[in-house]
Amino acid sequence: MPARIYPSTAVAVALLLLLVCQAAADSVSGAAPDSHSTVASAEALASVHRSGAPHVLASAVAQQAASPGPGEHHLGSRPRRPCATEAGQAPLSLSSPSAFMASSLTPTFWWGTATAAYQVEGYTTANGRGASIWDTFSATPGKTYNGESGEKADEFYKRYPADIKLMQSLGVRHFRMSVAWPRILPKGTGTVNQAGVNFYVTLVDALKAADIQPYVTLYHWDLPQTLQDSYGGWGSSRIVNDFAAYADVVFKALGSRVTYWTTFNEPWSFCFMGNANGQHAPGLTDRAVAWNCAYHVLLAHAAAVKKFRAAVPGGKIGMNINSDWSEPFSSSSQDQAAADRKVEFMAGIFGDPLYLGDWPASVKQRVPNLPTITSDQARDIKGSTDYFALNHYTTLYVKDAPGAYGLEGLLDASASANGPEGLVGPQADSSWLYTVPWGIRKMLNWVNNRYHPGEIYVTENGCDVPGESGLALPEALNDTFRVNFYQGYVQAAAQAAAYDGVPLKGYFAWSLLDNFEWADGYAKRFGIVYVDYSTQARYVKRSARYLANLFGTVGSA
Ligand code: PNW
Image 1: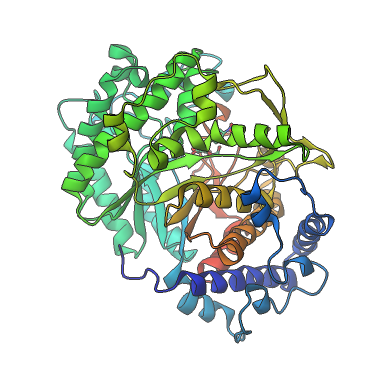
Image 2: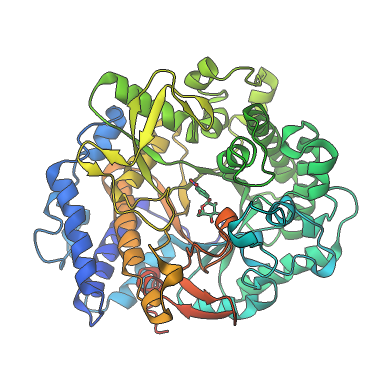
């Protein structure tokens, strides 16, 4: 672990809150043309708190999370400055906020941006890379928007030196990236492609030379096609040893350079969207395969972690678990139980085995032919992560609905963005994404109270902006919707840490660059940096400058 981690979480969190407030104040008080919408958002957030909505809670845990922290109920009802007392701390000098951030906050909290290999690298046939299931899926008519693929993406494979400079200019100190399995082992197993290994060694060294710590995910969805073809990929137990062998190659190549790792990005997404509703690669529609995938992911994780302990002493490893927050539609015990169940069917599918040693009881009761986690397997799986990595975007209202199915199977619950008081929050460009800052606070509390993981990192959070792809460049760069999203979510996450005792250690914005958004192709833009795909030019959006301010360096681009 790098030396700049944290003597005191409490102090770091208080400083984080102070900084979020300060950055908000900066964006409001500066000459920024988006000041009105930033103010508007702060007021919208305040009205949620004022109205007490949502006042129906999933559990005692959530009740604790929902209780206002000191000063919180004042949000928006008074000028933004000064904010120091919101963290319960004596006011600090804010005469030089940038220096304050750089010297006090940055050293104690991880600010980062996140990407994934297939979404940014391009050069999908260069230097011996084999085909992945996403190359095949994208090339299948009707599977992705306009038939788009990651063939070019952001050309990060060649352009990473300039992108690293860009990150430096934004004060980014941590960079979440993934390794493409088919670059390392073009056929999934067997002969190592040294050119692929060299690419990641060079990239990691370049990041470190720029004082940016790489945070490496081994699998962000680009399975070598040969493994899908030969035995059905994640549907087969044969994947377990193949993944562990691949992981070991990467641990040996990068283990002396990288401290923080994750095995899998969002297994819920790739198992269920890839195998149950077929919207992602490999495009299957068989729930039984999706549950086998989840099971094999857990076994493959445990097998890889065994290799990790031997190859990377002192390293830390986790799994990026994604979950929406589920807010009960009403205060009835049935709706509360339904909301609990919905989170158990998302975060709990992986979180429960990793921290508690078995599937959630609600899952065991409902999923037919659920693979059994044996006591031997549980011994390896339970306790195999060093920290909790949460990917979180949105919240839905959940009602008890006996007989109702979700993507995972029988849930006896239904979910909707429509709550008792209207829409849960402003809708982003993606139909599944609504801006709901209070949801991240509740989600963090759920994770902390159920698993007590000791350290929690938010490893993805961000949004696309309604209509952004249709906007002219100047309008796209003035992304106040995204500024408001980040402001709300970072503030709510900081409240979870400061008021609820959540051990939040870092935050990664998804994403550094507009990139290949899977089935949505290039139509959805999640970047804090705009990419003109016809020229590959990068343009810093307002949200990047907002985050740069948070990250400790006032952005100037
Ligand atoms: C995550 N959904 O994917 C992934 O980790 C990223 O690669 C992706 O770009 C990002 O979130 C934004 O979508 C998701 O439909 C894909 O609910 C789809 C969903 C959620 C997350």
